[in-house]
Image: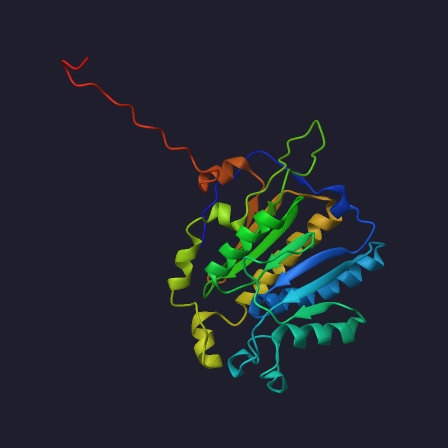
Length: 287
């Protein structure tokens, strides 16, 4: 889902709410998917937690949801070894990180759908199904009683995108006297046609590493995960965002930002324009 974005002249910001920008307790993060993108993100979250604590931040607490087991096609391309084959992806990675960093993060070997009800402040989706994104997005709208942040990662063979949007009631209070927005569009807002992605040839399970590499470049997961984690790291450190996403293209070795800009969102079709009702016209002679 590559998008061309025109330059925007205004530097618009979105400020995080106080309970996320300056939390008293560890931020709760739900990571859905521990495969190619999710595994890379999880490893970087471990490093982020260590760095945040060194800076006096309470850190983060992560729950990982993934029902899938490690297959031979995952070894090497994802962060798994032959000894992991047959074991649950989330449990393998969380156990490894807990031992390495001395954490107590949790893994749930379940499929997440419309029943998702999490208290997490930040939800990160790294799933390979567009239908799963739609179901998760619908669930977040129902179960988010206060504003949360949804970061979605998606990729094709050599391109990828990250979108960080807001879900839930209200919007983060923005400081007066500056150019700001309280609500950020999600991946479903900017790509309402996303369900068609499931029909593309790069989707679906792979039987071997060679087959998997035909569908996804070896390092596309690392690139998009780095973009996502840098976006989150920058927001938590600064307390605000000027970009809420990124577009990666390995063919051109480029990463383009998705700015916080109503002008850009309108170019991408959000919010959708209301259709005008057609006026009834009278025929000549009609009273």
